[in-house]
Image (spheres, rainbow, N blue to C red):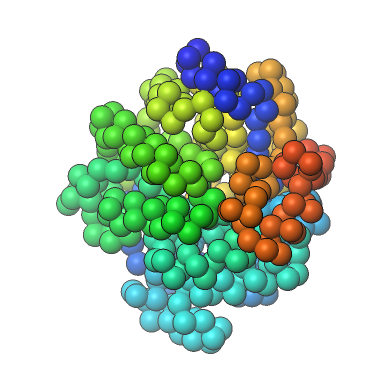
Length: 364
Ligand code: SF4
């Protein structure tokens, strides 16, 4: 941990960031069936798309609270599995779910000051090209590099979008198209420590090849009551801390390293393990992927960060070092720069404005 902290200080200084976001669950339908996932639901039982009106209600409320990120999260290619998905897309005039994400991204840019950050799962070359003009960055977790996790009885069995080679190809394609990209690993889903290490080295290689991985998420598995992995043991905090410190060793001093602060009661420990980012935190919407885990209030986040000896700063969904025309194009870059401080962070108050229960209920 001491070595990891030293590396972080050397590469990133004593600033710790977060992205003030709203979570926009574009669709809770998916063609995959990961056994730890509570986000996805079948049609008629919570599986649906947000309409453009729903999306606009969420992002407009977020705009009023100085949010700068619209996190567009969704299941993978639901139209390949569910006729209800195809019917919705037809009604919206969208040829695919990705096309609908692009349409919603355009709507968000036209109507609000928020910046879309799409997490639509596996993307093709044309998918990435379609989203790039409106998304300042994109993301997709690697989860883990091991094919073993796709075998029968393992969490990614029968999940075509969780085949490691397919995910690596999406990350590579984002690199070829110079998309600032967020990725990471999910720890505790049945992988071995060696497979954790292999995954971190795989990510390091991808980052070295293209330079586009703006942020690495190290996320601890939390068991959800309504999933097949509800009785699976979660990684212990001491083990997970070691993984985080190891990630800093492997990914290097300059890497932006994130642990979500809502999945550990005393999340301050990760500051001592070398992180420099808390990821997207919302003053308004729930974490739809971990709905049982509320975000810490921004005041608490700031206090915990300060107690560790760091300064908390809000950032855009694109990191300061990626705010250049190599990574973001044309008008989108001009807009993002106008939303940033001279050193590239989000030009918003750090923590003052919180949502209210009324707000949260108003946006589902
Ligand atoms: S691909 Fe993502 S959204 Fe779909 S089941 Fe797996 S974790 Fe859930």
